[in-house]
Image (spheres, one colour):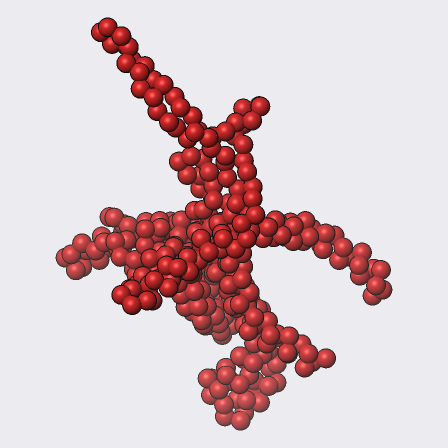
Amino acid sequence: MRSRTFYAFVAPSMALMFIFIALPLVSVAIQSFQLTQQVFEQVTTETCTPGFLKQTCVQEVKNLPKLDAEGRPIVETKFVGFETYRTVLQPAEVLRAFSEGGNGFAGLLNIDFYKALRFTLTFTLLTLPLVIGLGLTIALAVNSTMRTIRGPLIFVSLLPFIITPVIGALSIRWLFVGDGILTAVIAKLTGEHVAVFAHGWMIELLMMFYRVWHVAPFAFVIFYAGLQTVDRDTLESAVVDGASRFERLRYVIVPHLMPLIVFVSLIHLMDAYRAFDEVIGFSSQAHRISLQWLTYNYLIPDNSGNRSISRASASSMLTMIGIIILLLPLLRRTWREHRSKR
């Protein structure tokens, strides 16, 4: 392919990526070093009430938004450097937690960012092997069945992935919350009322279960497609040599599917690290929050109508840095394999 033809095909995609990805990312990075807030001024107001002989007046000093000539609140933006990141990370509180008399990790997890970081890392790293393992298991099982029933099995296996994430999370939540179906069954079997959503660890387990249930079909489709390209001659040679099912899986199938395993891992790490639907669907804000939810929470207007745009931007940048750190080992492995094949 000629260079001119190649650039003609790639240019539209690169232009859209620049407009919708690169520019917003630069904007968020800039906003994380700035502080944007309304300008307030002290205004003395006098309130008078009628009295018997004369009215009673009370003066009160209020902080009111300063308005421009058109009656709109004046917003001021100033450069604050890394002050916003210090506000989010709270290094002084971290040092206090690990100093003498501090609560250690318990005190650290009282800080919103580290509370969200702990849950996000646990949620991402624990669900990753479960998604890959369950997806590969389903793919192997479907690939081993008769061709006449593979179609219906594939359709049934894909149903959790088709359901909208928030709807799926709400559906599982309704099974356990209050007098849900499964809660009622457990209470009837044990004779005791089980308050599932009163315990943070139970909510976290349900959120992980939902993520695996929802994403495993995606891994299944990828691995099932990869199984169709496995060299049959190699498998038959392994059978002739007396290799067991586990040995064929370990030395033939898994090495063949390794590029797909890396691909699924990359997609899952990027998606799970930005967990948000589970927090909203399971209403876990009182017990478990994610980094993505923390960014969203910063953007909710406070009582005066201000939004913490700078803190939300800093939280977004820290989330992106975390994703890059998680992806680096897989990206390095992919790059080395690519270099070795050239």
